[in-house]
Image (tube, rainbow, N blue to C red):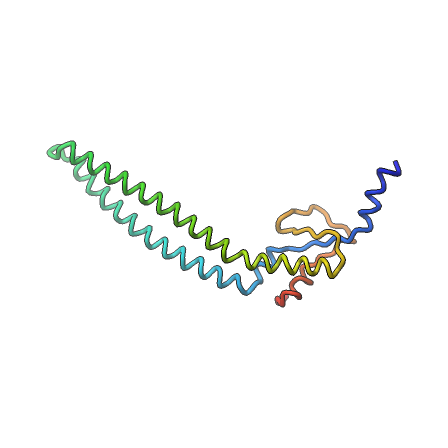
Length: 163
């Protein structure tokens, strides 16, 4: 029984801190620039997509005119269907590539911010001799005892963020 209690006794002496990295991220001044750049890119892609959508709608309207007219040969109708399919494929490919580009830019823009936050968390953890720091934005913590220390304000101070 004594052997089973040793890890519990050692944990009682551990310094445990918690931090909310999302709260810190939201306060970072670089976040506004990143969001503005992402919004601009997203709007550019949206405008281009609307052009593709307009082309598709026009082709669809042309197809409906031809499809309902028995005087048009089947070859023309088939060509119009093929054009619609190609246009639809083009739109889906554009959407996929746009989503990938936006995701890549998001990663590129947010990585330096999150790296800066992680470095500050690590520095506060080392300065405060913490054995463990849990990020409540990533890992839900159901309970924190009286000995658990919320280091979010210390990390904010180290990053020079306003409270």
